[in-house]
Image (cartoon, rainbow, N blue to C red; front, side, top):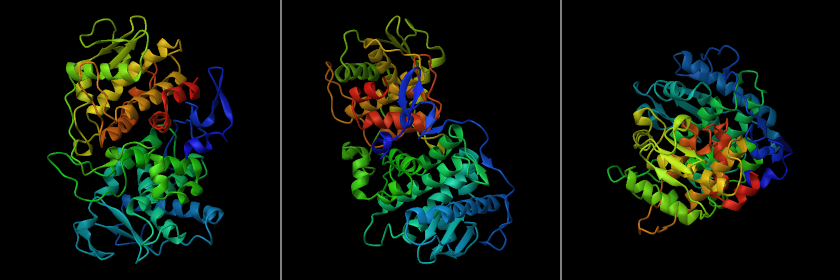
Length: 466
């Protein structure tokens, strides 16, 4: 969807070159990249009277302020895209999972770390003890808005007739809800909300990180994910939000099974198979040697870079844990730091998802800087950082199919690996930095550049980020 509307964007100048606003490193889907305040503008109202079962504490008051804002937006804009007028949900319920009660036919314990829209009862309910406080602590104030905008998205899709019991899969419903949340978030980011502000760098990145935390779990050999896919992978959740943020309600209405398949861009189905057990490989000299072989197959060049894992030939410096030095054409790795970045961990360890592909995508990004050097391109600009993210995406797509290096070894990415790369673009940004380790300011835009390469090819990256 982002590619489809890119041609309609007005170009701006970056380093003297015309760049579509869609792919401008200083913009986020056409909006300026901002780093100002984010969160509530006004005091939250009392939840008494509007929210059932409330303790009228800070969480429920903040949730109600977010609901008021979401309803304000859709009251003003619903009829511009959908038939009829917007009708708010009938009930809002705050749940303490420790206290027995029944909501939408479910016991309160089911609501631990959960929120939902209940179709039969036309209500939105949330866990005020675990979900919303933890989300706000780890992902910022606006994550509450993102969560509740997603649940309100479910109410909107039923009201607008976008889904039905027999016509849409769970995945379609969840992707549409993510998308509709993105529509609302753009309104806030544009400065139109009277209640909230949202900067388009760190705060928006935190909202995306919160969505990633709600991705479908990937099976491992120790833990099998038995539930069917529902919300989508991290890449799919982020891309759905980006569709709403960029293309608006019409983009959300267009989401169906065929659109989701199209957004996957012909990538192997194995990358979205959450039930197939996956495991992380060790980040060591042999793994990196194999990676360098594969990069040589994917990106042939006249003067390929050398790899140094002993600190020689290239000081890592601010590019830590991996650096590229064009003078010596060397990729240098701080192995302990890279191993730490590639150690399997997730939200249960109080970090966003990471694993072996977090580390591998970092090294790939330094390799593609060498590819740009081979073409005589500048390496020290925001455009170079965008091009680097794009080419990293190209390499990841190629690695989704078996490729054999001269040694006969292979590295094939599987389900969950792209999620690790996408999470890394938010948390460390290495794969979207220039040769000096300076990143593209917004994670939203970093991921967009990565997805462009993932769904395209190297020549497309060179042409778009010239």
